[in-house]
Image (cartoon, rainbow, N blue to C red; front, side):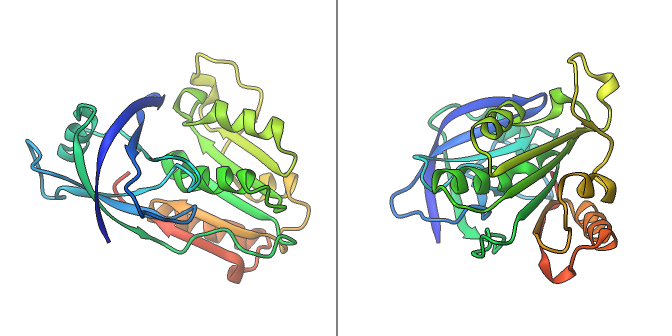
Amino acid sequence: MIYRTKLKKKEEVAEGTTAFYFEKPAGFMYKPGQHIDIKLLNPRETDAEGNSRIFSLVSAPYEEDITVTTRMRPTAFKRVFGAMPLGTEVEFEGPFGSMVLHNDSMKPAVFLAGGIGITPFMSMVREAIYEKLPHKIYLFYSNRRPEDTAFLKKLQETQKRNPNFVLIATMTDAEKSAKPWNGERGYIDGAMLKKFVSDLTKPIYYLAGPPLMVQAMREMIVKAGADEDNIKSEEFAGY
């Protein structure tokens, strides 16, 4: 279904990464982890990639706004999208996607995110906590530096308040940061998974990001001992 909505707010959530808050149209319903296709209306410039992009919903269904977040790359779409004045109308279609939290709370959920691939997991974590779901959730979240890590502070605060949520944030270039970093370092790998998840055969795994990253993550967790039937993924190009 196609909806129209207006931009309410913009907020920088990491260096070069912006969250966009839109009015939630009447009747629009979605599940955490789903995505929409946003279309610009009569943009002042365009390119071969067209006037629409896929965005995971960062907001949870209980929230009054619908929120998306993106890295601000130098493309025609991102230039127009980033410069939109508040009140600008856009169209969107959706929701799409089936990467939603499993029902069996006896099986832990393991989310693996790199960079802006955090977006669907923000919605899933927020909703699970709001609904007081009993699932144990592990979020492995890799970035270059704390400055590049969208929603890091919010996620750290969420972990302090919720014993069922475990955040494992890791930095691959922490030494280049102007901020101190006392957490994990390096890329997410089998050893890091085993450090925090005692039995890798039990969880349901969720992967989101560019196709090559998702493929590499899938191969890594299967090699570490995960059951391939327990892996859900969404691939998005053009981050």
